[in-house]
Length: 319
Image (cartoon, rainbow, N blue to C red; front, side, top):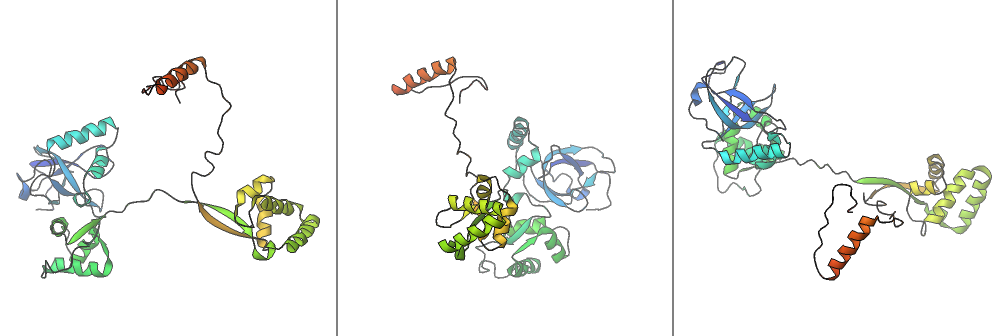
């Protein structure tokens, strides 16, 4: 392949594994003319440094402008997608108003959507017995992964001193020497809130009385917080700090002052995001005439063991 070639008699339109709602054109170098088919993957550069395994959607004939970039490599010997698959993807993209690149990300297995940031690790079943002797470059990758655990494709390029590594990695994936490690971003974050509880020395009744007398004279707001805690706690255990403050319309500053004095221990504790969501249940409501009729008919159907289907426009009061 001539890296300086800027005009091409053939080009491809490709789908990139990115949330982009369009295809991009790349020229086919002379070495691969007539060999690239729709549904095959090709390696392309997108942006200044990153490369991706893109899917060929169309093969185009004709001379292209100089700005067209060439494909870097052809990754498949035969197409991995056919027209039926593409049409289904395009229908999904239109129906769900979703970029076709996002469909590609969701639909293709990890090993078929590699890019320069893809992370590679040794296959858990690989022990070297099936392939006792590996070619030098494959052996170097395996040896490095035994010490590093994971490598990005960009790091493998640097390790081997070559730009085109997709075919090599693909071969090692097919022989179950390597495995693509997809990084799953955990969007859920656990919820944590501050809780307070009495320090051990303040659980004794006499110590509490002394504290009461002291706070009554010098810090009435702190006394309110202290009494609020006692009314909410069970045996001096943890109580949500916000509840302690809210009960007496106090301030966080007063609570923190008691923590500083050693009266309370303050700790951040994991809580369920469902807590307190359904504490208030509205029971004082009246059905409209139409709802009363619907309720009566539904009750009659259910009492006879029949299924009732409720039909109504949005916001008509079905719930």
